Image (tube, rainbow, N blue to C red; front, side, top):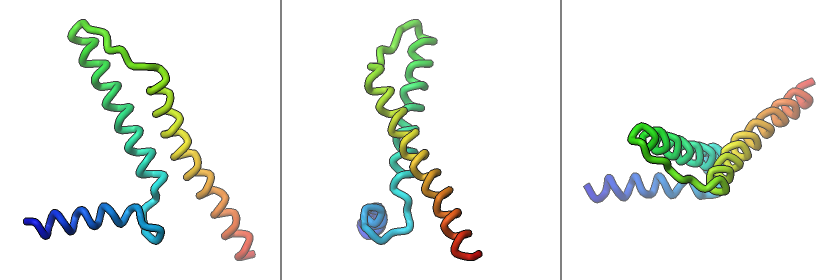
Length: 90
């Protein structure tokens, strides 16, 4: 059991190495999106119960900027890397 947990933890730490196959921008973007989804779910549940959930606009906007920035940077990287690859072929 301990070796299984240790192996999984070591696999998680591989994400933060310089040479890996994971896209860190996507991981950060997905985690920020998950936090935004949790905020939205909590807001809906508290609204149904008749209470108002106070979420700071600054915090929520920060998560929105992180999500858009993470996925936007990754998208631009993919677009420009495809153009570079096609120019090298022809």
